[in-house]
Amino acid sequence: MQSYNCPKCLMDLPLQGSTCGTILIMTSQPRALSKSQTPDQMPPSLNEEAYRRIEEMIVTLELAPGSVVSEAMLSERIGIGHTPIREALQRLAREHLVQILPRRGVIVTAIDVGHQLQILETRRELDRLIARSAATRATLAEREAMAAVAQSMEAAVKSEDLVSFLQWDNEMNRQSALSARNMVAAAAVSALHSASRRFWFYHHHGQVNATLRLHVALARAMASGKSDKAAEASDRLIDDLFDFAHRTLITRT
Image 1 (spheres, rainbow, N blue to C red):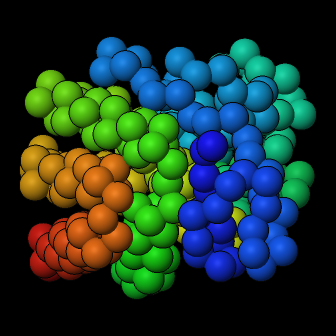
Image 2 (image 1 turned 180 degrees about the vertical axis):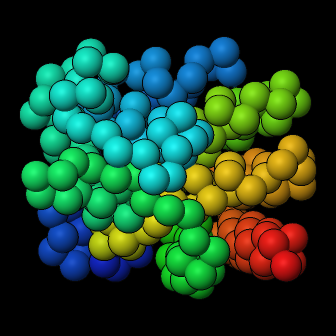
């Protein structure tokens, strides 16, 4: 019988229930993706697709900081109706990637190093918690899916395909949030990852290998099922991102 790690009593239990009275509801397991498959080949809802497309345009600077956009423009550009676009923009506003100005439109927010440092300070604690929990609580299928993500991330590093890498980084975050089984932590940190990725993409100037390989190492550590190893890999990545953010201050002076 398949078992499940209960988030309350932290015991491996049959799927029917737990000793602490928690009702365990299983959703379908994430399927492992092949190395040639990208996350955007998985069929999302229209709301999720609209969010994913606009978020990627902002993170990769296709929509530059300071750009003014509208629901109508985005709807025509990506071929999705106004309602999903509106929902996506509201979500992006909560993530501080856009600012919605009534009767004036939507502005893509500026990139600010002070904001990035605050994001990283918060992410350090949340990312470590999620990495440790994901390593501990992931099912075998979820660990296999994470290992496949790590392989695809490494392939993107070798081919120097940064857009593909960012897509797989997003998938790593999604998989780890699912495996951690802590909806509070996952919701809190999901609002921080996009702004952090955009900051990195804006400032990276081709110096990418070390940081990208730390992402791969984190994915592999979570796939290993070793919680301490995953927590250490998370801290090493955040340390590197802190150093990167501080270096942008030096280059500006």
